[in-house]
Amino acid sequence: MEKQYEEFVQVEMKADPAHDLNHVRRVVKMAKLLCERENAVSSVVIPAAWLHDCYSVAKNHPERHKSSKMAADKAIKFLSSIGYSQEYFGEIHHVIVAHSYSANVQPETIEARVVQDADRLDAIGAIGVARCIQVSTTLERALYCSTDTFCTSRVPDDDKYAIDHFYLKLLRLGKLMTTDSGIIEAKKRTDFMQSFLKQLKNEV
Image (cartoon, rainbow, N blue to C red; front, side):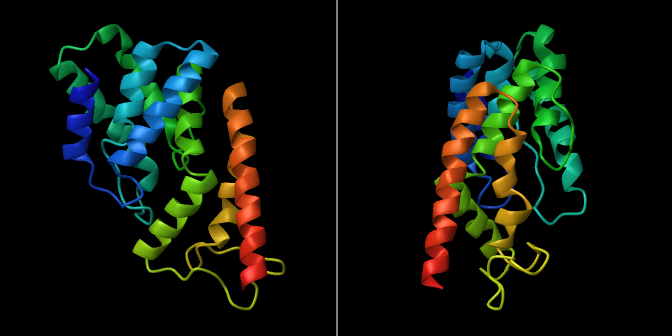
């Protein structure tokens, strides 16, 4: 059924460039890895990972926090239409709702923790750096503040500067991981981001 998931997502996704089909593919790949390591139920994890962003809105949209609930509703409707087992619908719905950072919903199952961690891991590391700049460029935000690039004496403002997003969110995501495997991978990716910022400091 994964081919059906991919085809559906490819048609339905209409968000910023950082939330494209490649993002979904990376999340699915990581979710499968975490699912195996954490002994989660793949029948819940895999469709939820594929469909987690089947409905989304722009990063600066005022109702951004509602998009995961809308995606969950849409995903269940789609799964029903292709004859997926209804016994998993409740769990899949919760996984998709809980994956979102902006929704601020606590994951209640290991499957929800797996997909949430997989999605958050795609926001950090090398791909996280690239996606942050990609989104900021789309929203026409400057790369950094010339007078205090690394927020040493001011409050970070990622509505204005891309680099500020590291201090408001990206460097903090590692501490929000809820699976053992996610914690280990997040440490590697956070270390990379710290190295990136150190090199950026040398260059600017």
